[in-house]
Image (cartoon, rainbow, N blue to C red; front, side):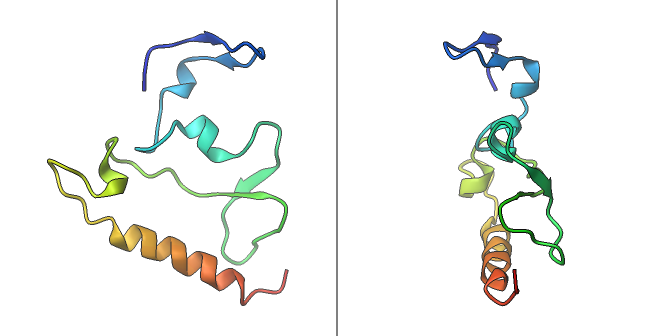
Length: 93
C-alpha cells in the first residue's frame, strides 16, 4: 500500500517491504512489535509471552470486512480465529 519510503521522526526505516498487506494493514507491522519474539503459530506448541505468527491472509483491502463490490464470506475466517482463542483456555501453559 502506498509509495512512501524513508524514515520516521523516530528513525524507523520504511522501505518497499512495508507495501505488502493482508487486506487491513501492512504485513511488517501486523506480525509483531519491533524486536519482540515471534514464532510461527503451531496449535500444539502455543507459548505465552511470544507472538504467535499466523499466515498472511491474501485479499483486497476490504475483503476482511466482507467486501463491497465482490462479496467475501469472511465469517468462517473469524470463526476459526475464535475457535483458536477459545482453545487456549483449555491448554496448560
